[in-house]
Amino acid sequence: MKTVSIVTPTYNSMRTLEDYMSAILMQDYPHEDLEIVIADGGSADGTIRRLEQYQSECDIPIHICKNPLKTAEAGKAVGVRKAVHEIVLLLDSDNIIPDPHWMTRMMAPFEEKEIIASEPIEYTYRKEDSTINRYCALIGMNDPLCMFTGNYDRKCMITGKWTTVPREEIDRGDYLSIRFRADMIPTIGANGFFMKRKELLENFEGDYLFDIDVLWELFLKDPQLRVAKVKTGIVHLFCPDLKTFKRKQNRRVMDFLYFSEAKGRKYPWGKVGKYKILLFCLSCITIIPLLVQSIIGFCRKPDWKVWLMHPVMCWVTLWVYGTGTIKGLFHKEAADRSDWKQ
Image (cartoon, rainbow, N blue to C red; front, side, top):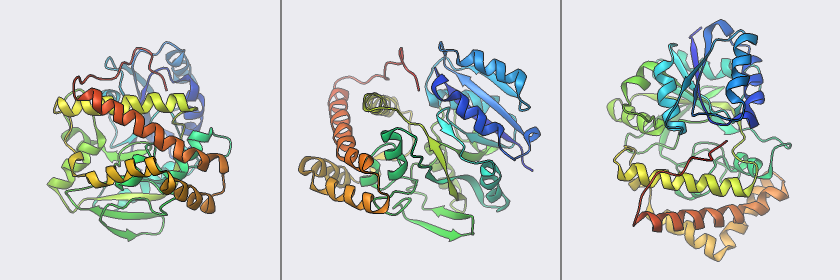
């Protein structure tokens, strides 16, 4: 069995910590082959105290290190450098592993020589989750704009696809073996993402680890590499309400503009078709396309609260990204994280 380091950034993560840990501890993958590396950004809500209790209670080693830059990308960089095992699992603190066999299934594709990484093909839908979390699970992304640009990476109930990016795809039974074109890959690399640690370490530098940037560089170097999309899901407790969604979207656009200006990103976001972004804007303004998408989604997975939210989520995204981009023309700065929490 290959050994696995579970790398998780935390910052005031008590809202999801118990579910996160319980799901890891129920895995049937050998616990002696696991370690958990926590990169904490200065939690003040009891996160560290509870993790220290877990250190003495559970049979998986837990290492806690400091992440002074607070962001998830900085935490991943800290955690990957502290990890010692062969495979790294990038698992956010708001990710809940859905079943005891999940890790065993996610690791199986690494027996294929060209496989460099694996991740679930969908998000797990649960009736008990918030409306917004159910919405994100059913559209297969946390950002509805990605559905229009097509570079998403989880199954979407509206399109019926897990991505529209060109690729070579082989069905291996429990997973799809994927080879992407070197010039464009979907936004893979988060929320239950497994990757060989050696290649991770060799393909990023500095204080931040942007997983999509690492994969893009790897595919440029070796177009024969493949990624596995395992036919399972993962729970992502992205946000409980619309206010939190708006805050996270604002943080996303501010960070993107800041790091782009600072030349901290390598993935060619400029290749995402501008006409697709324009289509998103027009769809929000005219609303008819959004209503059609809601009807399609409802027919495939009836949940009227979720599909009523679809136009609202698109409008909020358009407003936040639009105002953030306009502000960014004059002043770019990283999002304020003084009150940041999961």
